[in-house]
Image (cartoon, rainbow, N blue to C red; front, side, top):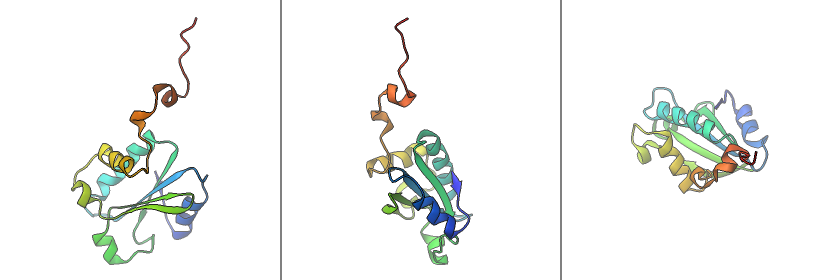
Length: 134
């Protein structure tokens, strides 16, 4: 997962990717319940979804108000072809304070923002078929 350090980098991470790539940005604050759990979940999901770009940015770096940082995080912003296609604030309202990567993945799949890996044939997941014809 990419840590974004300033607003220029944030725009670059969103705009300078192939239009087919989904960019998921976690807006977080230190010491806010749920943000650490979301970070861990997204690290796991980044390993399972290598064709999706995962980033995290503090609400201050993103230029959001201090009030948002306290009440709106953890938040997820989802971009496709440079356009915002998903905006979910205060994800702890959805998941509670303790949640897992599967919870976040299922939520994003249900909203059409991540591919459902359970529907992908094993041959495609592995990259190619094993050759048993020796």
